[in-house]
Length: 425
Image (cartoon, rainbow, N blue to C red; front, side, top):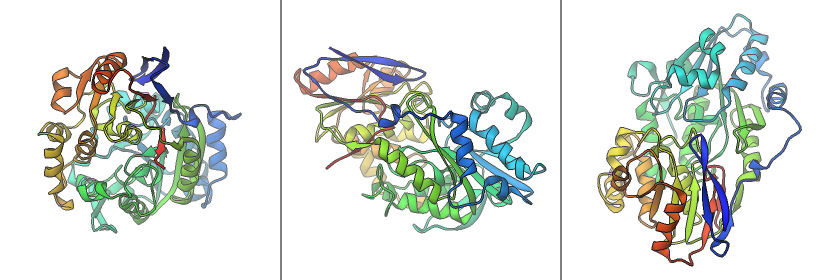
């Protein structure tokens, strides 16, 4: 019997798989990646050697208003380490700069003060100017242009009214944007609900290029880059993280060039051939990405690549915050996967419903695969209403899966489904 640890909320759960059933355990190489530099040294080195731009301190010279975009409570950006260094670098070039830290929420709820203190530290919360993007407040946004897809680009005024726009984030495989990081700080990060919705329309999500690891011809990525360029994003700072959310590499500089270097690094450590199993077990990497069901398709899409035509997927996701979105909750419970997909397919891009991308992806997966959701926070009734099978532990889920696929079913385990880029031959 093999015992495998699965990330779950702020800790982990164990799953026990018989040796004769276990076909593979797939992990990203980044979890074993070692560097002889500290996190601070990696960050400082990246800022000292930016890719495609002058140093941030040099860019800050003569700039009065500076907006620094950072991620919200759903992302694992180590801002408690990075933000003080970025702020110091800006003030090295311009001690008098008026800096606003803008939290990129996309369509998520506002980040609370308690969450800010956990993410940024008390010193920053008590002494810096912090603003939170509210996609649902029209007064926060200005129209900039029409994006390549035809979507209207409405962005937070703080990104337009500043003299220097800087972003920070982290890079990992992303199931419809190709990779996270870089341009995603702007779109969807600090855009209006209309812009985010159209970027995540049924048509865009349905493109064969809108998938994990693909940037070329990806319509979602192309609009994101165009948006970030349109507001003159001058400097990005992105990190790569290991399984413990520690910085193992950092990339700074030009919006596209620095991001491309980061993507190259992440791809080299995360990409692997998909291994097909009758049962595929995964997680959303634990906290903060497993806070709700709305975020969970990230890992389920990774499992999909290994689940064959009708494999069973076991998803371990705490869902401590429940469904995670009112529109998502309504859509995922409106009917069968086939009915959900048919309903969403009729919605024009400019009438996209907030959060509809999530039930769209789930419907695509659920039409082929049974999904067993392991959660100790959501009620079994809510799980069933979302077209999934409830379980309280990975072992209970595995027994249910064996009941569906047979006792001799092969099992593939992807402990952190968010960090793995599984590629079919």
